[in-house]
Image 1 (cartoon, helix red, strand yellow):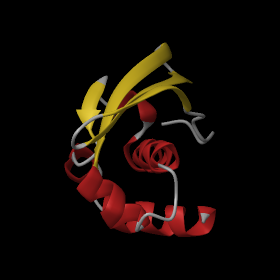
Image 2 (cartoon, helix red, strand yellow):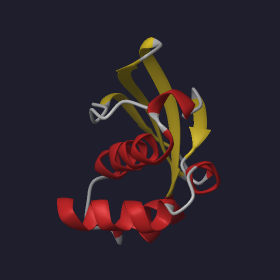
Image 3 (tube, helix red, strand yellow):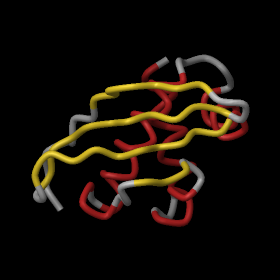
Length: 102
């Protein structure tokens, strides 16, 4: 895993009936990749309490996952809640991260 923080860029955001879908681009050891991340309303509310934009929460979730398990381990398509199973301590990590960005 690289010591450099991964830069994630939201390329598109689509709102749906249960939340949002983001296409997020970043570069890692595999080259430039795109992730499709779904963020449910409940996860958004749980992590941000409505104080940040959905795209800020989505990027924060990916940054925290990259810090905990490495960007190459993040699947190409996922729901944000999967990050809880992928990265132990994820809820605490994202809570601390988002509180610093408010």
